[in-house]
Image (cartoon, rainbow, N blue to C red):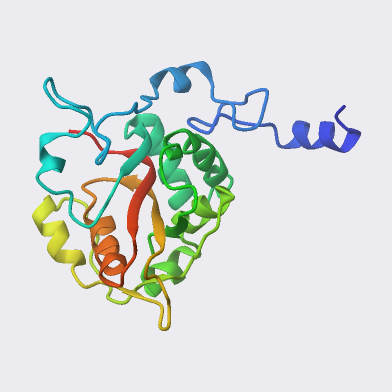
Length: 229
């Protein structure tokens, strides 16, 4: 039974739809319109997670030819109007509570990834961290309630924003931008990188390369949303 304090809090700060901000009846509950517009990503390629084509047998042709340093890549929803709103409101609108909403939606695609793996948030450079005040990937990873190492990876080189760059340009931009925390021991250990949005995966690949180069047994990637096409 809800307390008087709970009733007063709901009256003063009613729960709102994570997508559009419309008042709803419960925390983390989407309005019908926003919920209906979300595109949940189903299982596809065992490696990259993208939809399989006719003739593919569990793994797409691209991944059969080599998936780079990343193992499995998973995301909860496709990047669209609602998922973009959620990610932007967390990152730039300082709606910190949305990290918990995103983490909850990421539980489903986490199935199949190593349950013993340590979560590693994609790091921000200290200048961007100081300006924003927080790393959204850390908030999401923390809300997932699993073992996490929040500063295992460090962004040692400031890079320009990747928006508008093609995949090749993105990879070149983030090359050698990450390093392990001094003294970190990763050999033989599995890890799962955590991010809010996957665009091309260039940043995660650069992070995975550092971990695999230090002897990590596997490096997967989980995100809230993924840009398709």
